[in-house]
Image 1 (cartoon, rainbow, N blue to C red):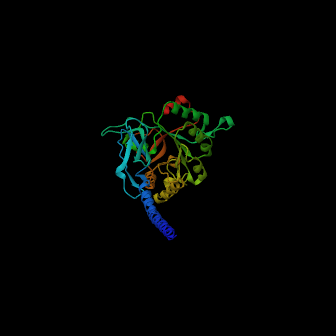
Image 2: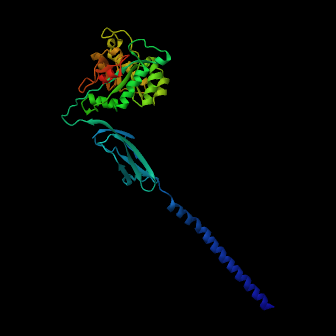
Length: 352
């Protein structure tokens, strides 16, 4: 009996020892497991990178003009600079006008940025080279629709189907529509425009421009500029049409009125330069900062009006002199080709 009790005690002690060992093992495992998980999580954390482009997202080049990389930078999620790991893919062909992409990527993070590069048809002139081309800047005013019983009040009013025929002719014959930046560079004899180049402008901002001309220009995807008298300008129109092909530029704010004794008698020629500049700055502000080009009211231009336009920051300015723009002209006294009612396609071709 005593031996049996002794044997039971030994069994109990053995069981307690085994249980104690199990507790120790369990405690040790549970105590160490979180540390191992933290280490693994840190090691498996995915590192991402962000690429930032310097300069503009879209760059414009002239034909044969070299592309200069504006630069870029990259930093990963651990705030480490990894710019030197960025891979750049450039497929630009400066000899062939068109749209290209420069792609920036880094590692396995799938991070990619794209810069658009547009090679224009205009080309940079070589040293000592001169351009023999000229540029017709067409000047329209108002439009009417004969099918709706409308009539033109004078020669400044063009029937909309005639206008469409002219636009269609330009599109079908692959005419080039240069930007204001290109026009300025052409006048300054820095670049040469394609032989078949043309600019479409419309003066005053009459409602017929919005009603008839702009929808038609959008239909053919042809860019044009409307010179607006901003004192009479409806800002809602700018908001509505700002994404269309039509660019809004200045016809002054409140200087398209009588009051001078030069040319057609516009007041611009009679005002002090500082007062004129203030008007022009108001116009620019109303147009959202547009100061690429201006059309003089009534076409009147003097030394003082040119000084005011230059001081206000315009690239180029236009009179109503009937002629084409040529390299070397005064860029603040440029002519335009007047487009009047009843012009046939045959006559239109001669204006180009």
